[in-house]
Image 1 (cartoon, one colour):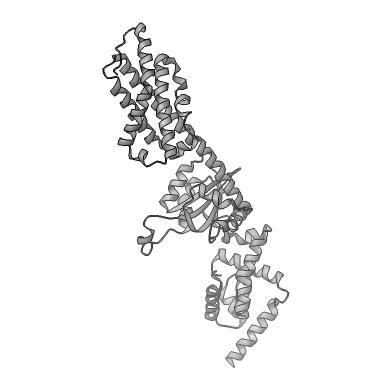
Image 2 (spheres, rainbow, N blue to C red):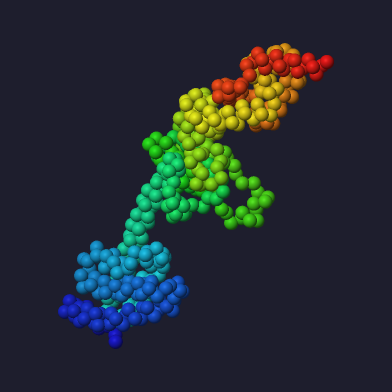
Length: 417
C-alpha cells in the first residue's frame, strides 16, 4: 500500500487515516529491521527487546498524532519514552537510542517515498524533534544520577570520617564505581571557592589513583586509594607506583588556601577511619606549625595534636618512640634525653655523659635506626622531646635524668677501666 499524495487540508485527513491503518505494518517492519541491522538489539533479553519494540511503536503513533497537530511537540518525550520501563535507560545507551530512531524513520520514509513531499519533510522534522527529546531524557537521567551519586558519595565520606560503618557500606562504595584497591589515605584541606571535582578526579587518574570527595563546611576531604590500571600486571614490577605523598602533592592545587594534611596509610577502605581521624586532628592544629609544608603528614604534627588533647597522638608518641627506646636500651634513651636537654649540642652531651662526641653521634644514629626519627633535625627533635615528656608522665618507672646520667657515667667508667 502506497501513501496517497496530499497537498491540501482536504486530503490530509485521508493521509492520516492511511497512516493509522498502516501503523501496525510500520511497527512490524521496524522490529524486523532492528533485528537485521542492530546487533545489540538481537542480543538483548526478550523482555527488553519487547520494551524497545514498544518504544518504536510509540514513536510511530506519536508521529501520526504530531502530523495531525505539529504544535504537540512538548508531548513527544512523554508519548514515546513513557512506554519504556526505567531500567531500559540503564541498558540502552543514548547512541543506541539514536540508532533506534534512525531505523524507525528509515522504515517510515521507505513506505512514504511515493507520497507527498510535505509528508517526507514532516518525517525529517519529527526525527529531529524526537532526537532532541531523547537527548533531553538521557540528560535528565544523567543529572539525576549525578545528584544521587554526589549524595551517596557524601554519605560514604561521612561514614569514613565518623567511623560508623554498617553492612551497606561496601555496596555503597561499589555503586560509586570505586576503583581503588589496597592501601588508602585521607587528605584534608580547605575547600576552594569554586570546587571542580572533575579536575580532582582527572588529576587522581593521572596519578593512578581514585578518590572519594566530601565537603564539610569549609573543609574538603579526599579519600585516596590506588586504582587498578590495565598495565598493573605487566608494568607493576618495573614502574614504581606514586606514593600517597606524591598523589597528595599533585592534588594540592585543587584545595583552597590554608593547611593541607595527609593521614597515614591504612590497609584498606574499611580502615580509612583511622587515617581520617589523624588527618582531621592534624588539620585542626596545623597552623601552629609555622613552616608546615603542603601537604603535611599527620604524624609530623604529633606534638601539636598531643598538646591539643588528641589521645591518639599521645599514645602514638609513647608507643612508637618512648617505649621502643626504653625496651631496646636505656643508654639510648638517656643519650637522647641529654642531647635534647642540651640544645642538640654534641659536645655538651658528651661532657654530661663523660663520653666522646663520636659516641654520642653513634648512639643518635642507633636511635634513628630503632624508631625512624632523626634527633639532629629541628622538627623531629620537637617530636622526640614531646614523646619523652609524655612517656615519662605515663611511665611510673621512668628514671630521673640525674640517676640516668650517673648510671651512664658509671657504665662508661667501667668500660674504660
